Length: 160
Image (tube, rainbow, N blue to C red; front, side, top):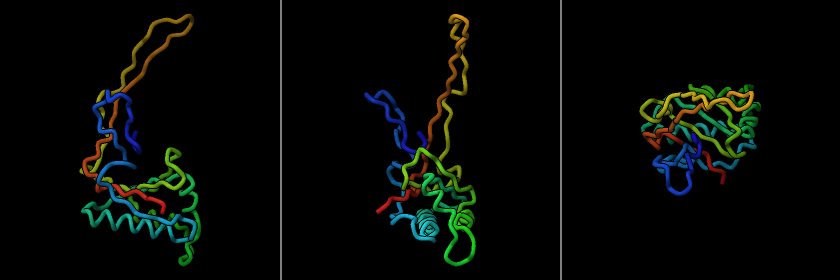
C-alpha cells in the first residue's frame, strides 16, 4: 500500500490508489545502475537536488531494494569509507531496505509533515467471533491510508 497504493477491483474503493512509486507529479532520477562505486552516492545527490529545486527540503529518507542496499556497502573510490556512510549524511531520516521493491527500485522522500503522512481511519479493533470447537477465534483489523500531500516531495530512481 505504501509503495504502490491500493488496487481494488471494480472501483469499490474511494482511495486515491497511488503510492510512493507511482504517484503523479513525483520527481524521477534516471540511473544506469549502481554497479560502479560512487554511482549510488551520485544518484542520491541528484535526487536531493531535484527535491530542493521543487522546494522540498530536509530531512530526507531513502528506501531501496535489498539488491541496491547491498551495493551501498562498498568502499568509495576516494575517501576510504563505505558509500552508505556518505549517503547517510544526506539522508538524516535514514537509509532503509524493503523486499517489496523490485531489484532496481528506490525512493528518496522529503519526510516533513507537510509532504505526506499516514492517516488512521479506524484504530485497532479486536472482535471475538465465538467458540469454534476448542478454539476462540478473534478478528483484528484497522484501516490506514498513505496521504501524499505534495507529490513533488518524492523522487524515484528509474533504471535507463
